[in-house]
Length: 272
Image (cartoon, rainbow, N blue to C red; front, side, top):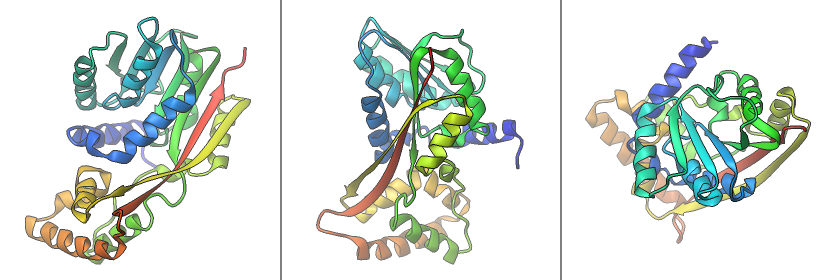
């Protein structure tokens, strides 16, 4: 087991490297928007978005809470936050700010936020219980913490096809900690261990069609799935691209390639 600070540095580097193409990854926004929608924010709320990334949840929340509300986003990666600030400026929003920070050690007083949200970020944190406990500290009594995670079967059968293609070339797929929160029981357990008694976990089968195999390839190379390709020569990378695009054709339908996104949405409410 790596030390927590080493894990955080690796996560920071990973997402800094992805920052320029992060917003091209379709499924991320789909889940993020659904988490914000299901959290039932209202005008005037104060919201904290942990692992805000390029600010998708923070911006969506800011548009809901309005000028009487306030949204703060926190992320480890300054590169991601650079894109978040640009998007906030483009949206001409004055009720949202983003800061570099550690989700387990927030620089906020106790009981200041009505809601805390974290979309697809909690499972990257070395100590999920410590993170949730810290978020609960800054939450007002009666407020909610909401987070999203992936259910079992993410991207299947496409991810299995890609992993097999990598292994045929002696490559290991990118290591992702998504299985830490892939069941309702996982999500319930981490919330209970963090001191929550009022809990709700919902499963939704999301997904979308990719019109062409080349767009699937673009999703691979712009996301974490494409990490193993970075070490390769251009020739080998092109060979793998050709092989994978050919095998993807067997999964094409009239609508395109279906990307299965089993999603879990979890909330805990602070007592009082």
